[in-house]
Structure formats: structure tokens, C-alpha cells
Length: 299
Image (tube, rainbow, N blue to C red; front, side, top):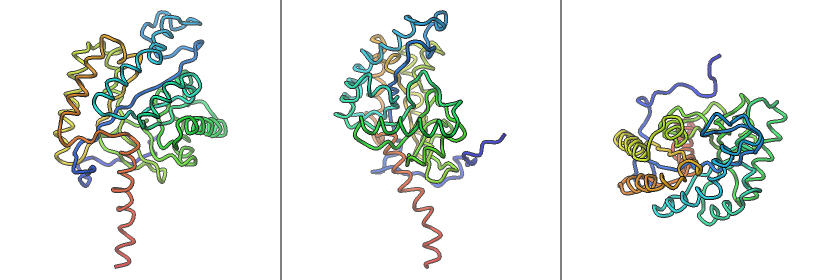
């Protein structure tokens, strides 16, 4: 079947996109803050034990992120004036309240990222998914003290009904569809896709491609340089996807710090959050476009 969630629109046919203050590249860190159930397989560094219950090797590796790794990542973000866009499992609010407190103190943006990262979004009926989303969104909103505006499914998973249901709960944007370097409207009225990356993503780079810290730094810089050059024709978005149990390992920390310093050291870069990117695109691009016919008739 064809994808009816969004229409094809090549980037070469669009009006130039502008960002606040004349900046040309919007940069945000998508920080995955997740909880994993101990008796289910999930993201693994060693497949040989992933079937075990409990899988001490892989679960301990993942748990390192909440216990240690995230605090290194926070140090790097703070050093370069970056607010995280947190892809938050609702179960984190109960299990790791210290992380929520640290993010609230830093005015992080909080996106719903499902209940936990051991459970994908697929396989639910509409009624089950509606109830699940209601609980997830309410839990995150209450814990963080701010309304949830964005969504990324665990493992970037959705059902065919997820976008429509997200609008029922007044969410504005999703990150699941990594199809562009700019935001674009979906065919669910009021819902936007904001760029995320499955390639500029520490899990892919380190655990799938087996890159070194130096390689990671080079990839991030190369991505930035090309998008910065492209942005001379209109604004672009660069998302850096991080997981504290991967990038938060001690031997990788300095390479993240170097990469963030490189990006933050350039003029014309909007260091922002996915929430603010979506809000700017909605207010400055979509609403004026929607108002144009009315202005024409009035004239």
C-alpha cells in the first residue's frame, strides 16, 4: 500500500525556510531517556545473551545510562548552552525521578516516547492505544510540569492510527518519520513531522557500524558542515540522537564534547529544541500559508 500519511514534496520546490534571528541551521539534541524491563529483550551490545531472563550483560549495559552516563551527557550539554529534547519513556518518571528533576531545572523539552523501551507501539487495537497514549501523556505531563507537544515511538514504532490519536491529545509533531532535513506537514491536520535521524544516532554509529570516538566526531562534523552549506538555500534542521548508555561511556565523552563545541562555535546556528522548531514552523510557515486564501478573498 502507498503511504498516505504525507505527500511527496522535493526540497528543491519549497520556499526558503527561515529561522529566528536570521539563523540558518536549527540544531537540537534528541536525548533518549528510557526504561527497560528486566525480563524482555531490547537494544543489546552482545546478542549472545539477549534471550536470557534476566540478561545481566545487556540490561546492565543499558542501565548504566540512567545511573552514570546521563550525568556526563548533562555536563556536555551544560558546557555548550544546550537544552535537551528528551524522548521520555513514561516509566522513567517513576523509576528515575532525579533525572526528571535535573531536566526541569534546565528547562528541557519533553516528548512522549511510549511507556518503556521494551514495548513497541505496534499490535494494539485503537482502543488499547488510545488508553495507552492517554496514560503516557498524562504521566509525563504531570511529572515534568509542562504539556507534551511531541512524540517519538519506542523504536520509532507507530500503528496506522497513532498520528490521528496523537492529535486527539493535542500533540503537534512527531519524530518517527526521518524523511527530510526540514519540518513538513502531515496529512493529519495540525500534525507536523520534525527531522530526527536514524543515521546520526549513537546506537547506529557505535553498536552497528562499530565506529570509534574519533569517527563519531568526524561524522557529526561532516553532517553539520554539509547541512550548514545547504542552509544557504534555506533553513535546515540537524538532529543529533543520543542514548546515555552509549555516548555516556567514559571513553566517548570527550568526542561528544568536541562535536558540540564545533557546532556551538559557528555563527548562524540556532541551538534549540524540537518543541521550538515545531512551534516556529507552525506559526511562521503553516499559519501564513493557510491564511493566504482568506487574505486574497478579503482583498
